[in-house]
Image: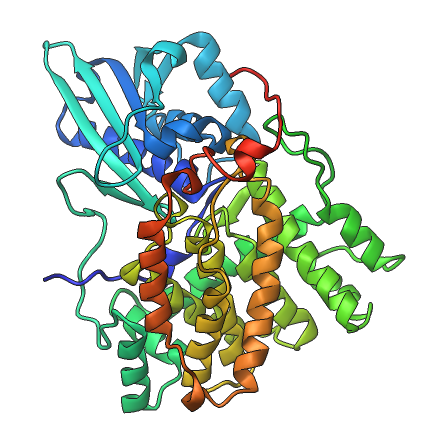
Length: 475
């Protein structure tokens, strides 16, 4: 059986908010569909397209911008480089003009009301996040392809493998935490060093380091923007952004002009427990407010949980003197491996496992990364990840109005604080005395996901989503 191979750049992907499974994944699926049409020499024959959204993509798709992402993906735009301030204007033009230009090359008549259908009461068996694209050709034939957005921006085509992934011979194949520990013990390498050796099977060390540098730049730019942008989040809930006002209150009269000067200014505010708690919350809020505003973020491992990793990394940079390239690389590599273990053994999709699969996994990733960077042993690193997830088990996904805002944004602050606490507990504990292994908690998380009622899996059919009265604008 072919084992799933996951790179650090599969876990950390630059994209546009608000959801990796409902925005980035459908965007990528739409891109793949138009690429498929081109490969079949069918693009210029297309006269009409229809998009069918199923399950969770239908129920919370509008709140997550699924329709927006699909229109941009079909247009040939890429979420890594597309200007975020053009998201609204371009999709509004498509809707008003009733013209969709596939891959930027082939114009077709398009009605968002008639050709992009939200099938609220239909689901496909493989995964709750399903989308079918239909292209009707001038020769009287049609092409239909179904894609599943399985979490974290990962996309699987119905009946096919991920054609974008190249299989390589990894020096240290890893499916479980026990596999990872085995290689660490056998080689004496840290977890981050094992991960780097595997990454070298895909690309050179220089390319990997440059890619991680790009990921870090995207993380810090997102956080910095979020800490300096005021206003109200889109979508109709009228949620006020808080990070900018909190940053201003905490920073006081100190001045700065860029990220590095900001770090210095934050350090000068002191390291009292309350101050650190406030700053960690500020960092996490900033990222997820950007995410909710269709800003550029990094899946970590998802968009909905994008604030935990940067908040804990920023805590390490500011309050633990971790601002070096080597330490940042170490942090990201370690975090990515924990994320991949959860994806292989359970899920990172809230539509499959509830919020434990997103905030829980991101908290485990951050806890592990922080622990290694603070000098923890390999066993302590895995213990920190276990502690963080153990105390997220059963966490539901019940977004109000189908928006990644309430309770999602605040959950990132809680996931970050839990990660730091889990790291401290692991560093002060002999892991030989641990009663629960990381593999046991991964297995438990998956069993919990299977048992969880579907109304708590990103459908907005239960929990806070039905107990908070709201009135959203008609779409």
